[in-house]
Image (cartoon, rainbow over all chains, first blue to last red; front, side, top):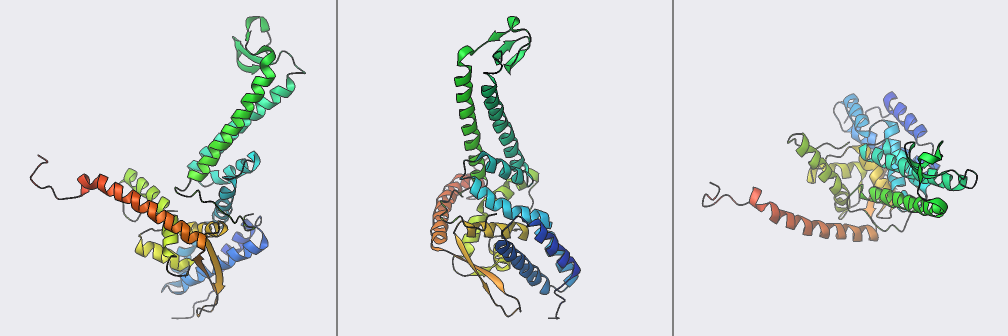
Length: 204
Length: 130
């Protein structure tokens, strides 16, 4: 075997980009990833007859450095978020996940719509004391939680029960969205709802 | 990042990709059942033994997650190649998990084999098909 030049401009460029894409990761974990990926590139390229072609091939199969970094953090985060009840962690994880495919995009829309409606409901509960006309109306001006311009032509549904009913609905909606997303995350790879005892520092 | 190794038209292929993807983790754990392997070896074992063509960009993050879940452990070992390699092996809970998956897989595949028997199985005897 000819001693192939292990350092190659393309490899160095790739590794530099990967390093900056992994900036959010703990230094220890980041170095471990970089070392492993470099070892992989070296191993894959060295044994090939056509060194330049082999480097091209392995870099292509690794995907762009940014995609690869996203995969690392998403794999870790999905695992963590699927056990979490924090809307913020779930939402940001879905955003990462959305970059990787249709299923993630769908989850992200569910998260945005679900938590968005819950947030709007919460806001209306807090605004009600300051704007008594705010309510759950239906009629020519529309349907839903609105402040109508002409209340006489509209019908108000909840009356004094507005605050407790909407608060309860918001609560149910937020819980429902969270559960749905947790299930989507766990369903991502069949047969993987493993009880994990170690959730160590490697995840961001 | 997955590539089905043979093509049977678009829809069939997509289904097959999903199936392979679902089996990937079990295949990784199964490959580590008997020996410690490093990433490239796992990749080769996957495409050789089980015909699961996995891109390296998919494999390494999964290995990292399996480690974070406590199913795998790893260690850097100096190799004659002149640079160290990261070897993976199953932890006790990884072995337990691999066994569970293998048992579930066996049961499932046995039932499905019976189910598809009329389609692909025994050569048509007695010309019942006409």
